[in-house]
Amino acid sequence: MISSAASSSSKSRGSLGATDARMDIAALGRAPLRFGLGTRHITSTDLQVAEANAELLSEDVPEPAGVASDVSLLRGFKATIPSAERGKSRRHQMRNVNTVHIGLKKLGTNARGLLAEDAYHDHESGSDDDLVMVNAHPKKRRGRRTRESLGASVALGKEELRRQEQEILFDKENIHVRRTLMLAEISEITAKIDSLEAIRSQLESDLLKLKEDELELDDELEGVRERKAIEEPNGQAKRVDQSSRRRKGPVFLPSEHDDLPPGIAFLTLPTSSQNAPIAALDFSEPYGTLVSAASESDDDPSPRVWDMLEIEEIGRLRGHRGPVRALQVEDHVCLTGGEDGALRVWDLRRVGDQDGELINLADIREEQDDDSTTSCIRNGTGNGSIVSGTDGPCARVLEGHSKAISALYFEENCLVSGASDKTLRQWDLTTGQCVMTMDILWAIAHPSGSSMSASTSGLLSGAASVIGNFAVPMPPRSDGSWDMYQDFIGAVQFWGYGLVSGSGDGVVRMWDMRTGQAHRTLLGHTAPVTCLQFDQLHIVTGSLDKSIRIWDIRTGGITDTIKFEHGVTALQFDTRKVVAAAGENAVKIYNRTTRQVSSLVTNGHTRPVERLRYMDRYLATGGLDSTVKIWAL
Image (cartoon, rainbow, N blue to C red; front, side, top):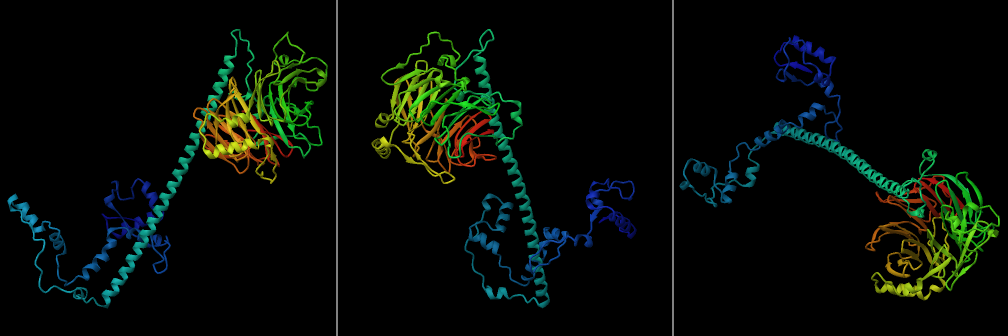
């Protein structure tokens, strides 16, 4: 569709038409612009575009009813050029033939007290002294036409009216074509915006991933520095007693672990009969030794010990007169607390060994102590005894609580236990002596460290009056099951001299282990606190009020609240995530960077999860389905 403006001969047009039959406009735009018109380069002034109706009319534009249905691309072009308004201008001029010139512009200028056009020109040609103000109220002209005479001043005729009707329809069609083009452009811009938003979202996601990678590197760096700090000058590594819950950096996992798909339970341990939910579990290290305890059933409720490298049960921890409610494993040492109110210290290396050899806690900790004694150590607040081989791997029994033990935490030679007798007890594991008793009832009656409203104070006073027989119904789980919650001390953890406890009155308390006094009370939960963990900056607590709260240790304020559909029974956190058991079959993972909650369900539990423990990318969970699941995170 290219013709030469310089040549009007039919022969030239014929040759160009033959060329156009084999080449489209896009191809011509990339051609060197030589079409047999000599060796001279063709410029834009030498070419003009002529309409090819056969091709352009084949491109249909959808039109509404009443408007032309077949509109070519050239038609769309004509609707957007200035000449599209030509019909409107022509009609306007036809309707104003023989009408009087009123001079509306000049009248409006005069009415606003402005210079008239003639006066302005006079001012331009004259001096400043020649300024003349136009009268804002000119005299009215005689013989002014009425509105009716102005509207009926021109007789157009049928042919002109028919032509104007066609022009109006044509103008409406132009408007529709322009509207369609604008809508198409808006759609294109919207698509570009959506594309940019998707790119922005991806970049933000990548940025958050970089933040998580940075946090992971920080943990790894801290772990390397911790390992570096324990190296002696001669290159010999010395033992440092530190809870695995506070160790930083990645653990040493087998190379095969990286081949496991993340978020899938790759191992299931059938720990007991179907009517015995998992009450407690812990492990020493990934693929190390795992201990699980089930609630009372027809089977033996003694905790089971598993070798997770060989994936086999290696023995039982027999000795408690009833189910075990709390336990903790560190290296080869395991501490258990049962419904019988007793605490037992176990050497996991001796599981299955029933020899009558004397076992001492110092031997378990791999520390030589020639002055160890076999006598019982007793005092007015509690007693501990070293037992002989009749109990197999049991090294010591600590007695002092009068009711079931529901929470415990130990580090090095210090142990803190909480029981349904509403007390916290601090133990020296070297001597087995209870060195301090902290009374929750006294702390409720003497709150400190936070301001309380009258309603909160009355709530605590009421709790103290009926706390003798503490029992509250748990919120229903996802499967509709529920129990009576009777563990008044839900969780404890200490670090140095700082102790944090969560109790059945929904209060989180911070204690000074040197004085035994609660120096700060954190209020926010509206139901019993069932689990907690803290580090240098934050305390994370879970409650039956269906929430997890993250507290700032420095201010005592809540920095984040995570809501769930059911009560929270277990949690653990690090700098990147919070893993929780929240009354569902799935394990809940809260990403602290993106603030999003995900679920682990593949090959998971068939009933709600109750307990969990993870280290780096190795997670163990126990549920109401009486099984322990091992996950790759």
